[in-house]
Image 1 (cartoon, rainbow, N blue to C red):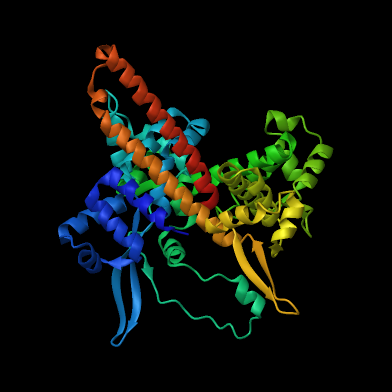
Image 2: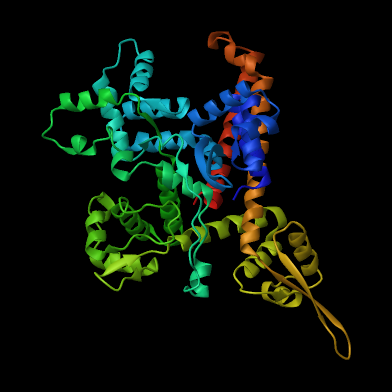
Length: 503
């Protein structure tokens, strides 16, 4: 879901990081979809050299993916290279501090430095990582040190091999749906071109998170480190990149756990964490609707790995599973949790919080009632259920409808006397898209204000700290406080953005 302000925000991020020319190519792809090189030159009105260099920058920083599309033509199969912008990866650039914090909690400082280089410089080969690590220190950094850090990051899937530079996409095959029922047709979602490119470009699991293409070599402890080093040396041209998918999965887990903690208690949160940790290797998708099935014994074993978990009894675990509404599987006494319900509840609370702050408590009660009701409610019924004055109710409802928070329909009954009724409901799919667009708009405004503050007093950054005294010191403190407030607000808003777009 890419909203209009989402596009503007993404273009602003690229402009800030790489300049106007790169941003112009990026915006063209965001608004028009996948394009060939020739189309990009024509639509952007830039030179071929400018478009080429802009694409190289965007590809280097994982914001564009090239692919070869096979198409049926009069003379047979035609192929052409097209370029697809990766909207999510552009927004992930805001989250680099969050990604580094995750790694700092799980791994050592060397791993943090290596990932920081990948986030800052984009795709890097092992040789480039060694060169950059050596530049940051007085003495040259040994290959095996960087290699060891990279191996740790690959093992925990924070780093991955880059996808194929130009995967080939064949024409989509039309499936025979005559034998399928209407229900199965509705359940199946058509594959997006992004998904097809991802499937074609990403290496096989055994290679994707391996230091060398021969994963057996790395996993075999009997093979000497020298032979491993020789194998890596042959592949020093292999580029690696940060695995954004894994970081988003970890951030989603954090939101799920904290939501359960506030809704229920620490025990329920500990059980959910145990289930997510115990099924991490089996979990393949970020937006999974249900957790991977796990037995009670496996959940209890996972809990015993933590200090708080070791204090829990089997009875407390069972009680927490009941609180979480776990579905008991038909086989192997396995349990699953409706993760989507937890995320949906968090989204509902976020929207209700916006309504409360913007429109007041009466509007909040009415909106909350409608969001938890299937179908329409009539104006007087809403007033009675929320204890709001009948004369005020239409005004509040109209304001929410005008701002796209409610859906309204007019009902006319013809009888002895014609009667008109206004019916109201919350259309969640449309509402969530609207709220997401508003969040992108707010994030853009915050970013523009931050850029303005940085540009206005940017010269202060060049003044030595011992020279910042008197009025200059006051200006510096004001600037620093403004930056911290704006950056903190943007990071909090980004948490909400991820809740609605990435989770």
